[in-house]
Amino acid sequence: ELVRTGYIGELRHIDVTLPVGNSTRGREESDFEEQPVPEDFDYEMWQGQAPDLPYIPARTHNTFRWNLAYSGGVLTDWGAHLIDLAQWANNTEKSGPVKVRGHGHFPPRDEVWNTTATFSIDYMYENGVTMNVSAMQPGIRFCGSEGCIGFTGWRKPLEASDSKILEISIPEKEQLYRPKVIVARDSNDGGEHKNFVDCVFSGEECYAPAETGHRTTSISHIGNISMRLGGRELEWDPKTERFVGDGEADAMLSREQREPWTLKNVQSWVNVG
Image 1 (cartoon, rainbow, N blue to C red):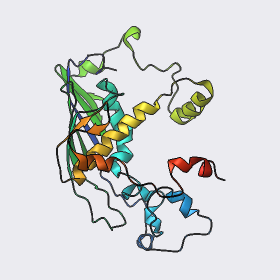
Image 2 (image 1 turned 135 degrees about the horizontal axis):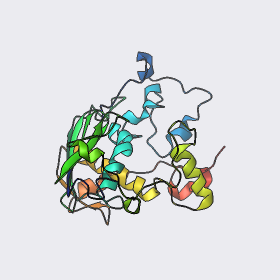
Image 3 (image 1 turned 90 degrees about the vertical axis):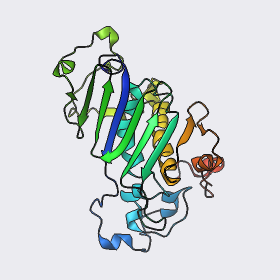
Image 4 (image 1 turned 90 degrees about the horizontal axis):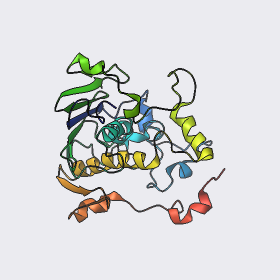
């Protein structure tokens, strides 16, 4: 709110920091070995249209996110929590950056976990705002012509370059994202999960609309593509959602869908069970 309504002046740069990826999450050494599929686990359906890989527990819940067959690593995992804030503040939640260049180390492709755990990715928007996304700890910082504001650490209090910024009270008529009903975090109201279900029935727009979520995720994906291409600077067209003049990068925006879990056959497998 403070950023988008101009209380730190003209927005110039955003720093988004995410946790370091590929955390073990309680995995044991044996979880990284090929094993028989448990009888109560429909592994075929779990994989869906992803490549058919041997069953290795560490590649499934909840550490599937560290394998490129199923996820984009911590960049897409945690990026969904914080890049959307950057998009909202920059008034680009229905668009995206126009340039990207990222650097990160990927383990060998045949490793159980092969996503990059540490990285630094630079983005540029059409309005001149720059953004860096890196692996450190959850946080975000906005810097404008008249000051900076943000937080370091998940759900930590706001910090600002001038304490007076934190004392600003935005007039109600200027508030953009004020919820209709304010509830305490521990009120068991169901948060965005219940809000989504409620909106399915009401037809109202969710806290996080589908377009907002898609744009947030696509920013992470194009960062991964730049890194997988060795840190290549890529020009991105947020209108067509294609790279400009780079067929190799464009080819990485999608992959072959494994039968029978393709979109053309969706009626045959959706809602199974």
